[in-house]
Length: 268
Image (cartoon, rainbow, N blue to C red):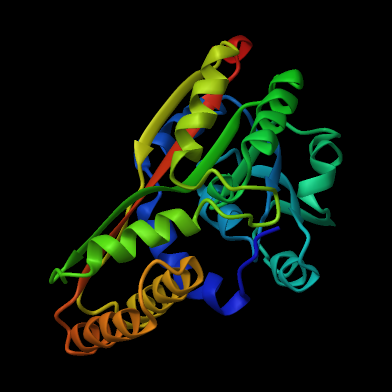
């Protein structure tokens, strides 16, 4: 249940890859360093970006079960071809059938850009079901509420506040956790005896990254309109100013995310 278009996923993938925490990836790699094969389930796989990012860090023979509710994205994900990597795509509504996605011969659960979309109840199910199976979990690119823009604009703080409120609206799993998702997940894994390595994994967009910046500020403006705290005119004028800075090559944006790897007690 990625909830994103294939075009947006393709646009953001190189920035996602650059943002992923090397510290966390190294811990994932170390956890399976003595293995020659590994079975992975990737929740809300989209077009397969997590698979493509993690494959170089895992044992040489891999079996991936890619799970999403979007059949079009699953079709694209299933077309990924990597030597010694077997890919199976499984359509699942994760809001209802999380347990079905986790059943079977799995040795690690992965997901990217999902946890900030889910509710507290769903997150608790995810942690409990993962722990019941004694599985490690790698969760990347959970938005944490931090946004910085250069040059600054007088309306930035109000737009960001609206974005963070919008992040907590229902994304298909109930009221979303938004910026607190990673912290909530980490705390729950730790209370079940898991060891957790976490690190920032911020998106960093420079002046040359015009296309992705334009998409992001348009999305933020749309979120602000949905929340309704600001006038439509103020939002439109803010978007015009932002677009002018971006197209002129004067804009930089940082968006805060968190990666973590949670290992069950028996794995340490």
